[in-house]
Image (cartoon, rainbow, N blue to C red; front, side):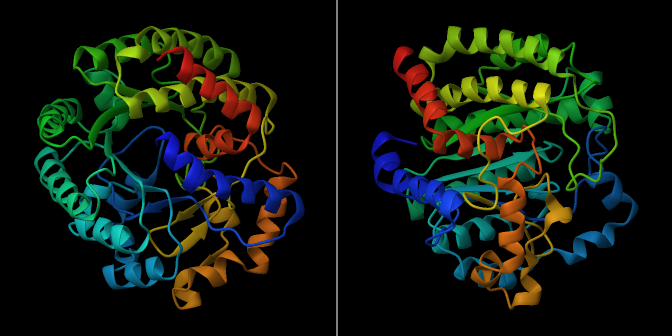
Length: 380
């Protein structure tokens, strides 16, 4: 995200969100779309049950939206700024590059991102190259980020992710994607960790290992109980005290290394410094620390056509299913049900450290945005 983009494309929309949340007037369209493209996932993670359910019942992914359905939905939407791909495991969809092509055509994103469990190194790299060529034809300035997961080193990673040999596949995926990074200026490789009770004492060694691989960008977020993950009630989240202690170390490392990174990575790291502080307070106080704009600035499209304000509320607070609304996103987005759910969020009915939504909230919250800008300026 550059300054020109922020001032011309994002700032006017962010101001509209503040007005809409306060007075419920005007029309709003999300800047961020997260799309869970499939229910399929080969992982059996200790922090998520999506893979467990799919491996026990593979027909779940037969409910995935088809390419034709996706085109109808995207055609009914306004442009977004951030297009986040999610899953299941996104690279299990053989038509993933075509989904990105449709997004570029209809949604006009300025940043595209996808995570991966890194279990299919060759397919991941082949499809990443196809996606980069699609983006190159659309706009070569648009960055594409792929984020393999790393939840531990060696056997620890395999145990948490539930697949023997996952760590070896991760190393192969990173090696191949780093080669792509040298070919495409707009391609960014980063690694990500889900901080849970299973790896809370391993984070220093994970981060040091990531940097030893020559990977510039490393992010983490807290393991959460989410309707999306079918893990409500699972004791996976670290305590607020544990998390805040860890974030002090992460903050120190970010501030020590931020100057050496490329502009996109520096901007992301500046936002993360603010996010870590807010996430710790949310865990400690169990309430919204800054206003949440889920269902206003951000929207989540589930693999089966469900529209969610975010993946944490997920099935419990679905705005509607696009298959029931003839794939017309606007009808769901401006429905009475959608307004009820926005009211629930505004009144503090929920609180979570979801990173994806938190970054949008930071951009809209003046004091938090100033903090992020200050971090960016002082580490130039």
